Structure formats: structure tokens, C-alpha cells
Length: 514
Ligand SMILES: Cc1cc2nc3c(=O)[nH]c(=O)nc-3n(C[C@H](O)[C@H](O)[C@H](O)COP(=O)(O)OP(=O)(O)OC[C@H]3O[C@@H](n4cnc5c(N)ncnc54)[C@H](O)[C@@H]3O)c2cc1C
Image 1 (tube, rainbow, N blue to C red):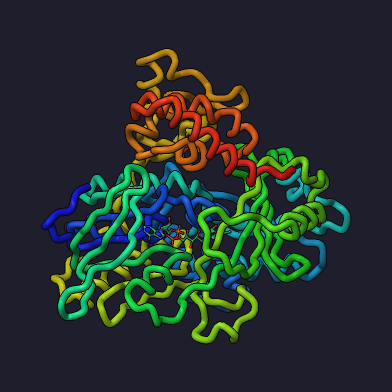
Image 2: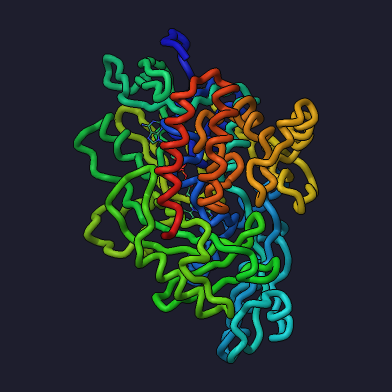
């Protein structure tokens, strides 16, 4: 990317779910679009979610019907447009008190009804025997029965990569490892572009644009301050931690949902890529970082809560990965109003500054498409640009494939699956596994570099094949082989390779519970 006189219609800052959704939306409407991400796509919050495409049963408990209805509708669109990544997941709430079965049956029937024609399946009460059949590891003492409901489950970072590819196919320029460092303003004080730094190769670039969108998640305030240093903070981060354990801790394909933990939260145990994700927590934090760290009390809380509902009680030594993510919750006007993050709004917040910077934050992965539509509409209005209607409701996302065979790992590539198989046929070494315990192959690393813009060992192991999240220790073992393949693809030297392995190992150690 060079300094250019070209004027973009949209410059999107941030390559998480929100920014990528906006790039897809703007490009598919035919607007000239560039997206700049300071690190890798989905490196921040968007690669660290619970991996649910859901309306949010918890918000229904709080009576936020409009939010739930919107998310359920979006869940339906996402399942329709990315069936290779979003699957229908059955959840079970075990009932231990007499009133729970009728109570949750009514609530979840309403949840299902709110999804209208986009329902993923009816919510139903089930017997104790059926609960045990579906979740063999559920604690049986005092178990009276359960309620089954359906929600979506997905691979967050893979979807981000596929959205990046969709945006590019619609004509957008999508760039990772390029950080926006300041904003340009014209003689009338209107924002007219950005200055960005290449975080890998070095170099500073100037880009001019009409609509400048700040979609940087928990980092939105740093961009807002480039516009107006006196502006009040818009986001207050809340940390959520997950633990990944072996699938034997649930013993089946169904997920478990605990609607009220000891401190009133919702807790999930969800099958994911032959593992189980346990989580999450919700702790206010003050650090805005790309690599948040789990607190000991968060880990203990998840282990303790899971241990209360599962016969095989997970111990620290069973944890294959611990990861933390920061929710970009929209802060209330007066921070002092809210000591607890659960009270802060989960819906998205969209604002335009006097100088024309459009900032979007909050929301959830599930609603990224609606957030993008709202943002592009608002930017067009603010900049008085000719309106073209949104096209994403029925836009197939890159990799679209109906009924993929989810028993094999490479289903995750959807329609690109054949490309990986072709690579493996092309050179026998590309068919070699990266680790005996996993099906990831050398060919997938080559694919990630050539087709998915992976530039580092972290990009490949954390967000293209998800090894870091499935088994952090095993991912450290895979790092040297991955570094060697990337080095050969990108013509990097031995020193680069060594440095990559060192950096990845240091980072990945924080995902291991010692
Ligand atoms: C623990 C947890 C669990 C969750 N679970 C779910 C779930 O199951 N389902 C669901 O629907 N939602 C879930 N969410 C919410 C969802 O993950 C987030 O709402 C969503 O990922 C936010 O995306 P984003 O693009 O706004 O932010 P991010 O993903 O953080 O993206 C912002 C990007 O901006 C980049 N950036 C920052 N500054 C600059 C700059 N100066 N220049 C260029 N780039 C920059 C960052 O590097 C980052 O990649 C969860 C959130 C958390 C924390």
C-alpha cells in the first residue's frame, strides 16, 4: 500500500467482527473500501468469544426482548449465509428443583418463538433419563429432568477470515498489520483520511477517504482521542475467561447451560472441535490490551462451577487452554453509575463526532451484520453520500457450503476444502501432520499464508487452525514446523524463524495453566 491520491469512500479502522462486517457491507454496496487492522484479523476480542451465535437467554431473563429478537434474527441470517461455520447446537439445562422445568420450558419456548421462522428447533422439557443420555457426565444427585433448546455455535476467528475474504471478493482492500496512528482533517475540521504504520515492514502511509469508521472494539477511545483529545471514554472493558478441556468432561454432543451460577451468572459447557469450552466470567478491568490474562479467581470460579454440575470434575491439570477476551461494553455516561459490568448495555452504540468520525462499539458477534448495516447507513447520512441499499442479508460468506461433513477437521474450510486437498496431493510433505494428536497439515499452513493473509506463527496456530485454543502446549510443539513453512513461503531467513518461534512460545505459555 502506498500513499495515493485515490479517495476511498470508506476507510474502516479495525479488523474484528465489527470492522470486517462493515467492510463487507460497504464493498458489497459498491463503495470503494479499505480496512486497516493493526495486528491480525480477530486477534483481539473476536477470536476469544464463547463461539455462540445466539439470542442470549440471559437477556431474556432480564426482559430485553428487542435485543433478543434482533440477535435471533441475525442468528438465522448467519446460519443461512455461512452454513459451513455455524451449526445448530442443542443445549440442555438440567433441573434440580421442582419449579425449574416449567419455568425454563416457558422461558425457552418464548425464546424459540421470538426467532419466528428462523427457529433452529423447538425448546422442550425432557426426562431425567434423557438428560443423562445426552450429557452422561451431568451430576445425577437430585436431578429431576431438564429442558432442551437450540442455538448456533461457530468458529469465530475462521468466520473473521472468511469475512475478510468476502470483503476482498466484493472489491475491498483488506490489510492486516497496519495501525492507524493519526487522523487527517481538512480546512473545515472534517476528517479526511488517516495516517497508518506498517507494523511488519515499517513505513508510514497516508490514505484519504470520505467516511472514516472507528470499529476498534475496546480500543475505540484511542481513535476518538485522535479526533478530540477532550472526549469522554465510550467503552469500559469487561474480561471474560474460558477454559478448554477434553470432550470426555461432557461425554456427549450436547452443550450444558447453567442459567444461574452461585453469583448469578450464566455458565456454558459447549462442545467445540472435539473439545469442551467452559465459561465465562465477567470482570471489570482497566487495561486495554491485545493479550489479556486470565485471573486466578476467574479460573477457580469456572473450575468450581463446572465441578458442581459435572461428575468428572475438571482440575487445573485438565485444562488444555485458558483464554481471556475483553468485551467492548458501551459505558454509561457517568462511569460511577456502574460498578458492575453486567449492568452496562450489551447492545451496540453508534455515534458520529462533529468532525465526521463514525464510531461503533459494543454489540456481539451474532449481531455484527446488523451493526455493519446501521454503521454504513449512518456514515452515508453524515457524509451526505448517495444511498445504496444494504445487500448482506442474503450474501453468502466466503467458504459457503451446505451440509459439510463435520466429522473431519477440514470441514471448517467449507468450499475451500478441495483447495487444501489439492495442495496435499501436489506435494507429499504438504499432507504431513503438524502434530500426532491433530489433523492439521503442513498444507493448511501454506494455504493460510497464500490465501488467508497469515503472516506469523500466531496467525496460523491461533486463528487459522485454532491449535493454540485447543491445546496450548501442543501448539508450542507445532511452532517450529509452522515457522519453517511460513519462512519458505515468504522468503524469510533463519533469524526470523527463530524469533517467531520464540515470540509465539512466550505468548502461548500464558494459555497454559501451570
Ligand atoms: C469472553 C467473551 C465472550 C463472548 N462470547 C460471545 C458469543 O458467544 N457470541 C457473541 O455473539 N458474542 C460474544 N462476545 C462478543 C463479541 O466477541 C464481540 O462483541 C465482538 O467480537 C467485538 O468485535 P469488534 O470487532 O468490535 O472488536 P475486536 O474484535 O476487538 O476488533 C477490534 C480490532 O481493532 C483493531 N485495532 C485497534 N486499534 C487499531 C488501530 N489504531 N489501527 C488499526 N486497527 C486497530 C484491533 O487490533 C482489533 O483487532 C463475547 C465477548 C467476550 C469478551
